[in-house]
Image (tube, rainbow, N blue to C red; front, side):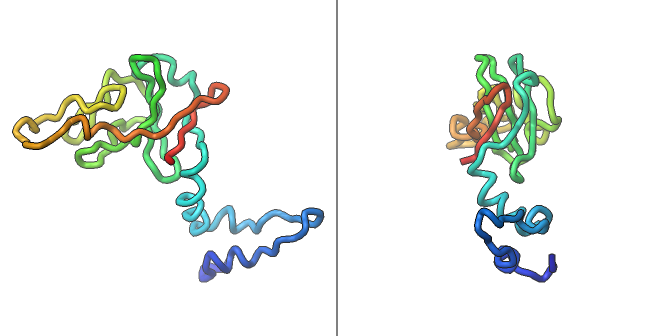
Length: 159
């Protein structure tokens, strides 16, 4: 595909045919970064995406992290045995809270400044923040993403 082509030109280059004469879209649709970026913005966030297998998250504190549609995601089994998904982003300085692709933790602690969240995503510890006025911990927990389990496969959806 011509690198100077616009996304509109890429799409227009594919002539839709009757179903009896249908062909697959051009290979550039699967390799062009501009098409991928459009899908990442408009398609992936609205569809379920694979995040892991339940066998990876059998016990409280077990987690997996993934980048899904360009977003850092963490899936965690809570102490109440519920699977939860969060954006893997500390609410303080946007560092990754969990830095390994999988593991087990008693809490979710940002390595940057030590903000600590429980396994339900609630902010429970903010070192050196005791004197900050008008700060509400309840409003600064990890941001959730929708999760579901389908035949032993954990999924997540951002919208």
